[in-house]
Length: 186
Image (cartoon, helix red, strand yellow):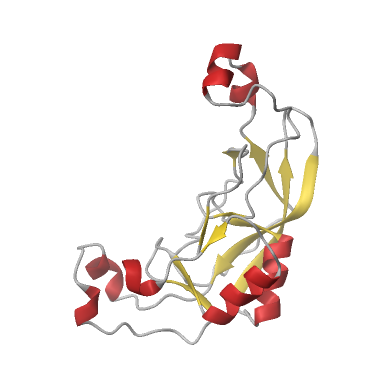
């Protein structure tokens, strides 16, 4: 499962500075002060001259016209919109550590409270994490799959979801979330 967003996409600027590995598949075992504050990186776009904005096809958009992706795994901690979270929970996902989050738009000063930072507790097989990075032919091997509906394939790797999760997300009509069948890449 991955997300690309819909044009124009609001880039992430600053994420909370927190310890811990949020994509290891392991429980965090730490206290977190909520809400976690994220800031969109829109200043550079609106500070750029008209020629640069035109080259990015952004001249007609105001600060509140930018779309915030429903899933941002590149942010640390990872972030998801609450409608996506509701779809995951509706499908039966129960291995997420969740934290209230707020996303700030520094140009318009608007705040979005419909996000949660998350940690997925579950990974396919810790012994495989190093081997998978060596581009081995996975068709020759069987991966030990954890008993979760959502998990990481390997540390800091792609998010894998059960088909019931994919169906729940499609039913919720959450745009820009993409699913790659496992036989295509992994």
